Structures are given as structure tokens and as C-alpha cells.
Length: 113
Length: 116
Image 1: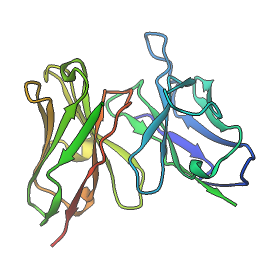
Image 2: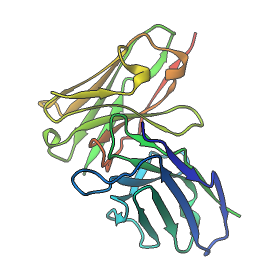
Image 3: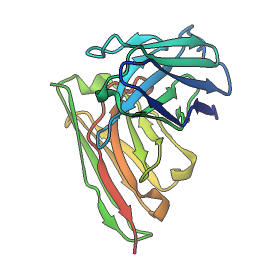
């Protein structure tokens, strides 16, 4: 199984400042079709997860452009250029290249300092 | 509006059974794989099972193999999760999710509590 490792576990951020979350996979997420199936999800308190980014760097409709995804192979990053109060929550990466099983990272909790 | 609505959760004793349902609307249901993902209290997300568009392929996480069965009814735009021999560690919110790896649409979840 592919292990997804996120860091940090907790990320206190000042409003308006940038934030960065790392996600590493135990093997390359490049698929045989050439795509890299790495998604990022946001889960606000008390809500269902919501997809923010798919295939490494593609932002979902309605997602603010302060969110961006990057990376390749086994190393990926989610960046928030300027954190807003509504960004508080837990962020998860997930790989959809090698399955079953599909696997999630352990989550990174973003909070305001 | 694209929507997934789960139902069927509740309190069940260890060893008992529950059947979760998920009703889809707002999209061509038969064009999509469907997935169940769960989240134990205070924990992260765990993929549980998925099913191909026509129901011909099904996959499960090892911890539920032989106990859970995923199925679907394309005429009713619904996916189901039959859960047998439930254990305390199955306690979680169960989410219905569209797709097999994209996971672009999530339901609000249904809570399952396994306890005596």
C-alpha cells in the first residue's frame, strides 16, 4: 500500500500570511497513463471534506486562487498564499494512482495564531 | 445541483448489521464509479470500498473484506453499503463519494456507532 505522509501535523498561521503543507508518498504517483493522481481536500470544522486540488495542481471550480498545488513524483505541496479565517480546518492529501487501497495522508490542522 | 445524501446510520451492537444508502441526484449516476469513505471520531479519512459504473468491479479495504458489501442500483441512482459483523472499530461517519479516485463530490455523511 502507498503510505502518504503529511507535515506538519499542526500549522498555526497569522491571518494574511502564507502557509505550506507537505505531502510525501512512499512511491511515485505517476500513473501508467502519464497522469499523477494526487488530490487535496479541505475539511472545515463540522463539515464534509471538499476537494480543492486534483491531479497535483488543478484547482476545483469555486476554490479561491490563493490555494495552489505543486509537486511531482513523491513530493507534493499545498500552498495558501494569504490565509483567511475561513481556511481554518484540516487538510488532507490523497493518492488515486495505486489502488486498491486509495490512501489519504494523516491530515494537517490549520489554525489561526 | 449535484448531491449525495446518505442514510441508514445509527447505533448497533457489536456483531450486528446495518445497511447504508446513498441517493445521488443532479448528474448521470451511471457514468460514475462510487465510493464509501469513513472517518472515525477525531481521526482522519479512510477509504472503505468502491464500485464500478456497472457494478462489475468492487474493491474493499482489508479491514472490511468479508464483512461489508458494496452494491448499486443505477435505476435508483443509489449506492449501498451492507455492513455485517460490525466491530467497535467500525464506529465512524460514513461518506458517500462520487468517483473512484477524483472524489469531487461528497455527501454530508451518516454516523455509525457500534457499541453495547
